[in-house]
Length: 341
Image 1 (tube, rainbow, N blue to C red):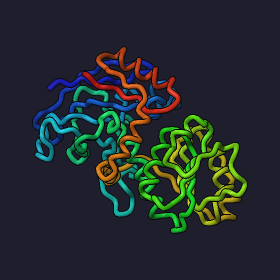
Image 2 (image 1 turned 180 degrees about the vertical axis):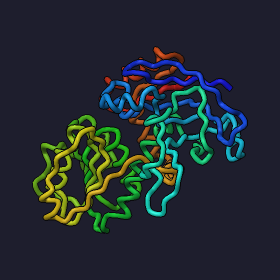
Image 3 (image 1 turned 180 degrees about the horizontal axis):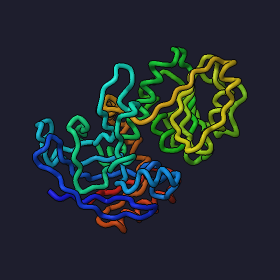
Image 4 (image 1 turned 45 degrees about the vertical axis):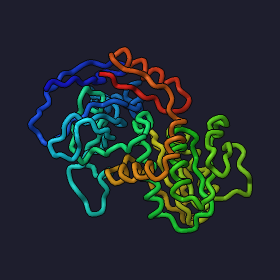
């Protein structure tokens, strides 16, 4: 079967490539329906990665956050017509101590090989998760980034000590919002404080116990643990502010992605005996837990719908470019492409 793949060949330039899909293999075939644009996709689209990296990665189909409809599954795990979330991480080995999303041998769609901007996707059945009935697919489209937050929160639960009276999250963007939302459901007895720079965005964190701009934090406010969800140029300042506000032997979870090295106050890390750990991507277990939380707490989906930004029907390359360009201009939220290919 002939498949159409939409690859980014240079910044802001998509081209069509045709590939053959075997119908005799063991992989399932899924038709993407809802695709979510991530900041990582934008770094490729805008050419914000180093020239050497772009040369190594491109041409490549973007998008690693997506849902679709099963066309066929030789394993019989899924029936044609079922709605599924696609997992972009593809492990090729197992390790007793290292999770699949940290194994250097694992492959990740839209980072080294083609993502979900295709007419059809061939994918191993164990990389698919059923979408529960009633879940809005525009929300399900960004299950991947939600699963990253759930992964980080699960690691926090294993690593951080049990004094969890007050926890802070730095970052008022999508990642901060998602992490804060799921933290409140996973740790309902902990007081949760949000720290950001945009008062309008902070007003959306209605489920938090309090919100603060980073310029106006009460002098007597201290935290047991904290999460950094800022990333980029602001991550260094956020981490140092966390170090100032965290109690000794607290835990700092870093989720924000920065392209360049970040300077932080190591002296106070040593003096306070702090634990710092990073979390990136997610694996099958994190996707399963995320979908279970969708089912257990369906009101979560209403909160997540607040960060659905532009929704763009996509039938052509010009439609793709329009969606990506609009995503650049947004101040908050996730841009969803309705993949009508």
